[in-house]
Image 1 (cartoon, rainbow, N blue to C red):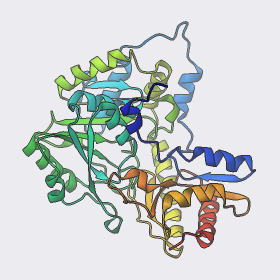
Image 2: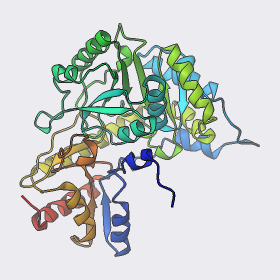
Image 3: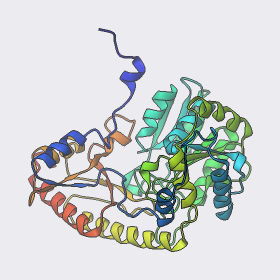
Image 4: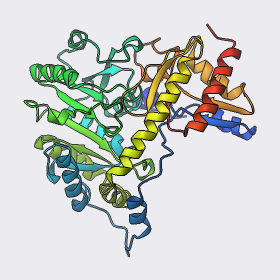
Length: 398
């Protein structure tokens, strides 16, 4: 039988989705499964987007321009200008989700076997994108004890070699919910400028900042305008993950022209998704204000409830809708699987994402889980109560 490719063997399974068969089996047994494992908001998609889809009047659903519909790119440029990011429609390539934007950025800027540095824990699919592009992710560990703040700059500089081509950040961060400050970004700017690196900035959770905290975009770092590549997505901002629309934004014309070749090779981004995305730019401010209030309430409940469970520590994130919590367990992956296979409380159980899948350093995150607070508070109450009972019963408790 022919053998599988080496790249296929290296491609990691998703720590977020690989336990799905066990959750499906739990549901077949009649159990309620509370999904804290995946960032799928239950917040309604804005009416302007849904109405745009309902009122489509097309005779043919055509290919779009490989960079995305011009009308959408112009509207996106206006959106960014409105939040202080001065770009034009020619600085934007619409992509199939933020995922494709990261992949295009990697393939346009990094040669095979070269390296991109990131703080771990990091969005697990960066590993998959790196394998696809044939490059290497080099981790610098951040720690739960200081809420996963940016690691010391000296530690980042130690990882820079002749093979280093860039640094990637996710701000606000998935999986930790940490919001990088302007001061931290200025420190990164100095490294990027000194070593002439790319700074890939994944800002898909920009609107989700709490406690009066302000998001500071890497696009506003002066002196490295041609080094910064912004990755964005409509998935979480407008709660429309399924339309699969993202964007790559940069003032570096050479990167744009290079990424366009990859964009042309895949023909075009989704036509119907662009219609929803373009309409979504008109979402009223009140929508985001209400969403922010809702997520703040969910976060406050969840963090407080988790920290009341003996042996659990959960930082209070200032952005996104995730946190990484430390549990009194021997192995979070074993625990997550046990929750679905063997445990039930009042005929319900919980699905979490083992945090080890968000680290590259072997052995890291073994007693941590990523939790997404994307459920309504009543469901979160049931989920956390179930989790507390599970920790009492788990045979691998430490």
